[in-house]
Length: 254
Image: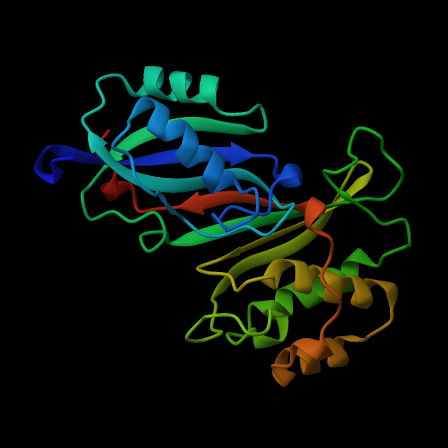
């Protein structure tokens, strides 16, 4: 492909992660990125590997994620998204394609990411595989106090998977809160970046707080310990959704 004639595009994607070993292409594992790249080459044989806004773990869902790809100019973006969706499986959807500046990057240009964690308080056949069923009583008031404390810290090594390839464990949490919605509890969290396994580890530890198995002082000590073994077990992946990735508006050309 002649790079001088190519345009960089951001593809907005959503998927149900149940059948996949996360976003990122891996050897001997079925991933969302693999499905996407296999579909893309059917429309654009010159298409190479895509660059995603981040990873999701096995079984995690996504309402909004982005990847970028350089392609020859696409005349009709809406039609291109339609054709791509005809090729992709039913649990993966391209929501929109937009042209962006040539220096825009799906991962590094993002200014924030937001996750939702859904907990079903009762057995719900329509939410099976899409929420974490957790029927024990929870104190949402103290869990919200714990969530609020997260914003006062920067180092979240205690909630990171071990042996991860990052240079530091610093994150700026912009918002975190719990709410009761019908028969579900929802946890929402937004930050400039997240560590691998971070949200599920935070949820698992806040559940300990909500059950009274740890108190606020102990919750704070867990964060300060920078020790993953001190935090709670990771909450299951089926309740987790990547729901938003935000970019500066000026990167978009259309």
